[in-house]
Amino acid sequence: MKELHRQLAVALAITTSINAFAVDNEREIPPAFGPHVNLTAKDFAGSKSFTAKDRIVGTYYFYWYDISTKSHITNPENGSDGLTTHPPTLEDFSYKSVRWHKKQLSDMEAAGIDVALMVFWGSPAEHATNTALHWSFAGLPPLVQAREELLREGKHPPRIGLFYDTSTLQNNHWNYHADLTTDYGKKFFYGTVRDFFSCLPPKHWAMMDGKPIVLMYAAAFAKKWDQGFIDYTKAEFPKEFGGRVPWIAPQRSWNVKGDATCDWGGALAFRNPGIGEIGPGYNDSHVFGRTPLIREREGGKFYEESWLKFLRRPTNFVMIETWSEFHEGTDIAESKEYGRQYIELTRKYSRLFKRGWKPASPKDEFTGAKSATATPATPKEKSALALVPWGDGPVKTETVAGRGAWAAKSANGHSCYVYFRLRDSFKPAGKMNAAIEVEYFDTAPGQLSIEFDGSDPNAPFGGAYTRSEKIALTGDKQWKTASFKLNEARFLNSQNGSADFRVVAETAEFAIARVTLTRR
Image (cartoon, rainbow, N blue to C red):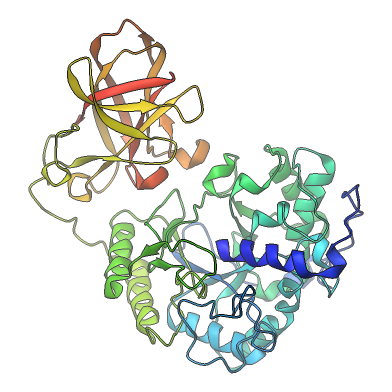
């Protein structure tokens, strides 16, 4: 995904028409780009919808490639190969090609995929054909034609939904940085959703209970936001689209109420904040200017293990990350490097998922154990509980008041976070009541609590940071022990770093000598 952001920056730098941005970037929002607006109930004749009870497999479809211009195929800085994995042939490798889209949709059907979410950058700022991101619009008519042909042939290609790449809230032809708390910002956000679906006849829409499916990327690109932009989109969309209200799943970072929660990053580690996220691995070593980040595929083992984790405690919607992001090597589409291996694996596991099959939990010496303890001196392989280092939870192993401890300093100036993960073999198949005991050094006045992966999908962040009761910290410089009760924890690795819970100390510094989790 970062590759989109890098190439966009290059495109903006070299596109002459973008050099003269208006001082006031709140330009008039143009009418819908496509013809499929002002719809009535008749326009939905023949359309189909999933229900919330259906088991659905989706994937993220990157379609921005164009062999004729080498766009998103070579690195624009030096013309070198920008792809880590490669399609079997570069012939017709283009968002403009009906044949290419038809092959991808046909292969998705073979893989058991029900929904293709188009990774879309087509904001209201990109209507003109000379804009850097107009490919988002230009690729949709060939996609529709490809799907029409497959339907006429009696095939069942995946239905089409929207993955709103929210980086366009900051990176767009108008150089507008969206404040989604304002009327204009809400209109800009809605305009992107409207523009996408206006390009597709409703018979091609992926819908949940009659609502078109929209998943969202990260919140970091918006200047400001609150619940209002979601509510505005849900109120405005029916006015132009036959009374249909969009089904919106924000990425966890938005912390707003949607219909579900997603969380980009499954190619690096399985996660499930409500919508499961699974990927085959990650390798961006061909992307110019990056320090490579690699998550090895392990011959398919990583992908299969992610599927098994999901199947042990499934939700009804899982996304494969990705179908065709060849830059970062997260693709499962047919490729030179892997052939159809990942299409075959996806077909295997999607069938098992839809049949309701559940694999046995992994078993080892920690299976059925009453408790698990982590200390700085405990090797990871000797315990079912382990520390998870993370950016907002940096810790160092130090001696504090005569004891070995994890010493934490706040990354934000007011709270310390220390993350932990349980082994899968320790976890039950469903929800779990637990108690956590923390042995800590009372460094400064504040409050102490646990935030854990809870089971309420309607809670903030999809329940991933459900908070326990708080206890007071006095700052008396003494070692103490605190106990917390966790009710209906699900421990699905939904927190940062695929952690299951974190200790939260609302102080600038904090130290922990021991954490013990016990079943209740």
